[in-house]
Structure formats: structure tokens, C-alpha cells
Image 1 (cartoon, rainbow, N blue to C red):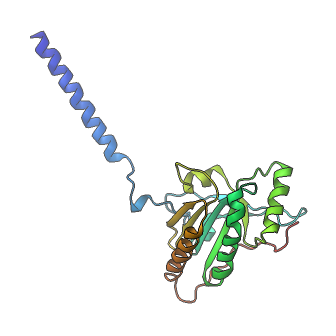
Image 2 (image 1 turned 90 degrees about the vertical axis):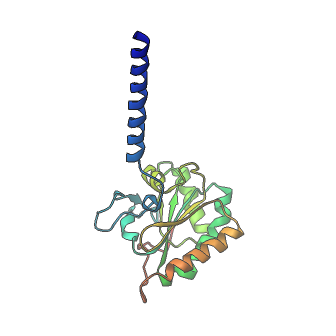
Image 3 (image 1 turned 90 degrees about the horizontal axis):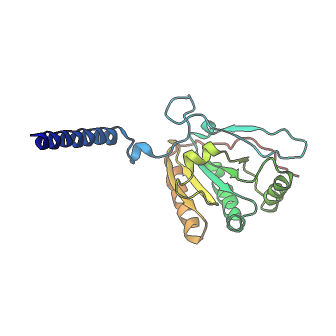
Length: 213
């Protein structure tokens, strides 16, 4: 009788554990269309909190501005995470500048997100030299851990890493590294997303001085 009682107890424990596991699985978020990373909603609603980044000052005497990522929603947006000392970033930078040049008047914008240490004067100087060398005229800010957590590939935080959002605020493309196939893919996807914008809607990028020193 004792053995039967012990077996019954074990069976009940296993059954309860199985039920608990199934309940946890049911409550856990699932990967699907609802889990695609999004830019914060402009009105503050939604699941993505407001994310604010510090702009790289355009000049030594300029005050650092800030950009709210919610201000980009409604545009076709490319978040370009890079590091000025990265060889691949050196190669891909001119292509991002070209994309911005070709599509900015149609509602496309770029926000560069540098992973350089903003508290290291040498790193800041190197970053500004990088921006000047490649004639980068779109806004560039310093990346934050929150931005990485929400938008970077969860398994690979390597750079360059480009994340493209449609006008609906949802991520449509994310790639790490650069190559000719990526250039073609981004152009095609940007064209597709721009075609979804309301007619005549041109999205201006956040204001930034043209000169950097």
C-alpha cells in the first residue's frame, strides 16, 4: 500500500509540474508579428518605452542635443550602429551616406548610432574625424544599452548593424556587416517602404548643423 501511495504522489507531482510548465509557456511572449521591434509611439502609448539618445556635437563649442526615437516614427528610418575604429564600418559608411542622399527627399532618414565612448576625449576626436572623412550629414548620436537591447540582434551585437523601420514603426530589415548584396537589399526594401508612405509626405531628419570640427 505504501508503494502505491508513493507512486500516486509522484504521479500527482509530475502532473502538477507539467500543468505549471504549460501555463508558463502559454503566458510567455511568442515570436511573431506582434514581437517585431518597434520605434516608440509618438503619443507615448504602446509597449516600447521612450528612448532618448545624445547627439554628437557638431562643433567643439556646441551643446549636445538629444533625439527621441519616437520623433522618427512615421518615417522610413535606418538606425545605423557603427564604431569609428571598425574596418567594416569604414567600408559601409559611404554607402549609408549615398542611401541618405538618394532617398532623403522622399521620406527616408538615417540616425547614426556610434558605439564609441563619449566620455573618452580620444575616442570622441576619432569619431568626429570619421564623420568628417565620410561627409556624414545625417544625425549621429551615441548608442545606449537600451537601444541595443531593443533593436540590435539579440545574439550578435557586432557592427556595423543596420536596422530599418517602415513608416508604421515596425522593423522590416536588420543586417550585420556590409557587402554588395546588402546594398541592393536595403535599396529594394527602402523603395518598398517609401511606396507605402502617403503621397507627398517627405519626412525631414532631426535638425543638425552641417559642420563638424
